[in-house]
Image (tube, rainbow, N blue to C red):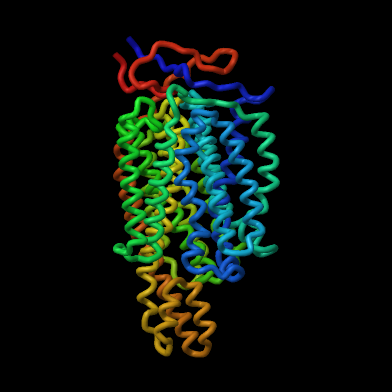
Length: 544
């Protein structure tokens, strides 16, 4: 008997609005994703302006940057699986509304605490939007070949948003004020809310049995503890600090209990059997490693361009544009490259290319080298986008349609967890390599050196207060120490990327495809004989 690839009975897909088709749906989903991805990086070039205006402490500044990915990562599983139950479009539209409200709060934030709250609410809205876009995409593109094209567009848009954020942020900061970087979200969300209600199809996964509310909150608490613990480690650099160890251990313990709970339940929140599939678990790990390298490096690169090379926020954003264009090219070519080379070679090659780009960037020094930076960013953008495309496509194709929300949540959790870990871990490496370089500067008091050791921006402020030869010596030493720290961080990042290249060898050699299940007039896949784990649009591993 041959396995028939069909949809399960509980998986339901309502047709889109009149005249709409799946490619129109893709445009709407990508617009949603663009805003969420853009918001993750739009504040990076505005950090100096925020620091000057709101005067946040070092911890508050880290929270301003990290509250968004932290909260988003913690809640992705909750809202991803909730969408499977109550409707993915419904959760997406609620996310639109909350994202718009939180953006308005961020625009007019007058204290660090209000801005942190606004960024946290943006994280909640992002957690509603991100898995819903990917799970709806999984539902409306059951054929793997078409889905690969759609994921290529989707991943390219994510890269565009992340890389365009600094450009847009630089323009807004240079011409208006730092709060204006959030202003674009409000009118766009006002348009997206009615448009999404009209165009997007509603889809649900399996609704048998009760939704595991306790499990959903356990996942949120566990992820929050783990990412917060890593964040504290990046700030304090003290592994034995109770404020670092406690949340990290609690988070890990809660996640272990969560996994055991899911394995015992008849109707689990997340089907843990997905992780038993090498392609799924490997793809998730590759996403974490790729994002760990990208986001940590991007934040450090922004500081390098502004504080070492002296570029304006807008000039900094423009310098990052080659990364955007390269990522767009990788997304467009992703589908054909995946069919030609297969997931294993595609993801591994992407990691190796990215590692080569990172090592090339170690040639950067205290003086501007535009050609080197441009070429390095092109390789970096193309390599990372190639990796992310292959990993996302493999992960999503390994999940069934009814588990699309949970699988998308896992993928996006990996994305956000990797981003948070990248900022914390690479930031910690950067600080550890930077601080000793200015510990003993001639003519600079010990207390001033300690303050300058927190960051290059703070070192410049201390140097300005000191003035004279001592201030100039501190400024020069800080620049040298920062470049040294940057080189050390790049080498560490390259190590993570090469580790990802080795891990990707567990992915399948070839992209296996089968025809999608036939659909009736209502847009619902017809039901046919099934066997084993129910999979949609993915070839069964064996045929009896």
